[in-house]
Length: 137
Image (cartoon, helix red, strand yellow):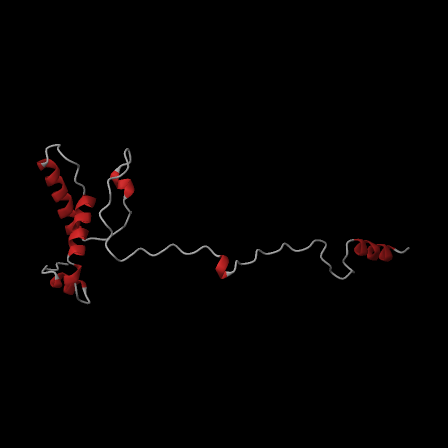
């Protein structure tokens, strides 16, 4: 056998001269579940104002029963809310519960929701005006 013939024989051993055939079956891709089998999307929150929350279960801090929501306010609003919360806490002289910035924001949201029928406009300034408030930027 010539050296060249041996090289051809070796290449045959490695499958270089043979048609490519997969030695293992390709991994099966996970099929997409049918729409009817998919998990339903989380329900959208109701637009109606919820009933006042019941007292939290014993041993659970109230803030853990509330929904976390981020909001953007002006620096002046943040300063005024902070000063108001501190002032109210000093005035309560240790009685009652601690008043936080979040407490006052929730109060403001409740006031807004109580007057939602008066709310109309297409800009923030018009919305302020519809409630008899002055809009300061």
